[in-house]
Length: 95
Image 1 (cartoon, helix red, strand yellow):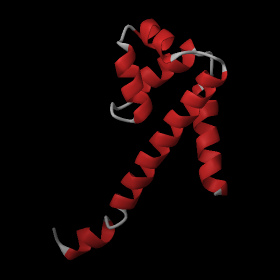
Image 2 (cartoon, helix red, strand yellow):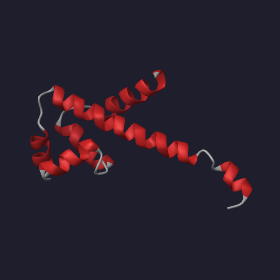
Image 3 (cartoon, rainbow, N blue to C red):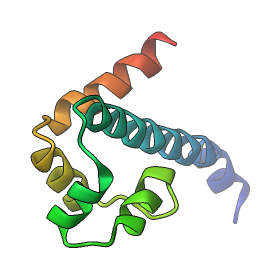
């Protein structure tokens, strides 16, 4: 890679790191909301048609959470996905 390209894209690892961190925060917020409502991961897993162990792996970040699955979980737990994203974004800006 030429020096100009390295200079132009030097920030990419930082962006990737921030993106991973935000994904973790979104999952944490989603889990906190459904646990706060007394909703169990087994019920969500059953509604999604996946094993409870897969839901646990999503919670722990072992499995990637796709946008489709995120929106499906939000629908199941009756939460607005944009509220979850805004909450995690706002907390990152103020911290």
